[in-house]
Image (tube, rainbow, N blue to C red):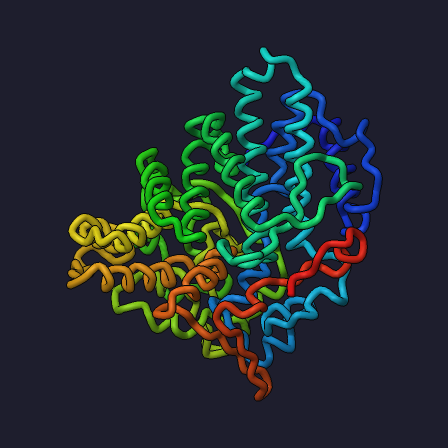
Length: 461
């Protein structure tokens, strides 16, 4: 990834990062406007191109989902207390720390976006309407919407929950003034407003795969509408994203360059592959790389003979008897959380199944799934009903998208509202069982206590 950053702006970004280095500083420190505010469009673009701030997403949803499981040795070997508590859905998760990156980093992204949007409003009409300014504004709106969406998946009840609170809605750069939590619907209204405006501003394509564009805005909207159960709009935006281009990764082509058995800590999926629409990666948490952290057995067992995802996504660890995840679209040990063509295909297929478009969807399903097998190894499937197709698509989401940021966590939250797909999660550590019931209160992480203390925010029940 290529990013040009002038020395003055580099100093400015370091100052902002220092300002936000702890939760208390982020909320209490009075920002030095003369340091942190960009002055030119080039400064603003460079600020948005800072991938140490943007293109990074939380890990807590992965720890709490059912994608990964740890044995006793792995659990006891976790270095971070909050990781152990996220893994067992402990409500005391943030009580021993003032640094909660899963909260502060999205708000850091929001702050950067608010600074840029305010600075753009200070410019004259002619400058605001220039191509570069419009693209910068669209990018800031996109990143702000994505940050709020992620926060809502972690710290608020699912969309449509009666009387639910959202997360603090900050639309300015004054870090000393924080509003109380609005109704959940108000948060979502802002997310959709930001993305609607971004659609009118973003370019059709991007120079760098870390920059959003018109296609990725449609992709994010498809992801969000799926999460709230608006399948008509989810299909509409997934279709728009797919119509704008992109190709599926053909796993038989990936396999051709591999020698089996794969060596430990080898990551087969190429970093810059044709399937990626927007590159995001999860925070680097060392506990994610434990050899005693495995892909859940139900995922491992779901791959049929000939399905190349089992060989390319999973490493059979003979020393531990489990399968470690190596299918990162980052090309290395970092976990990918961005948008892909394959995710858009699966969103479209699920929505088609839900509207009973069986004849239309089945050929698309078979064409998509064939890319995960060697040529000639895949046999087209047929389905007697749209319900059977929906079951198959949801299974393929499980097989295709493990360890992709908050995707599985969000799927659990939305599918738990459908009795036929609700799932009770359980862990057993040193003989003690931990259980997460569908739609239970622990599907919402507590607001970090330090935020409650400093800002008087209302805690989740």
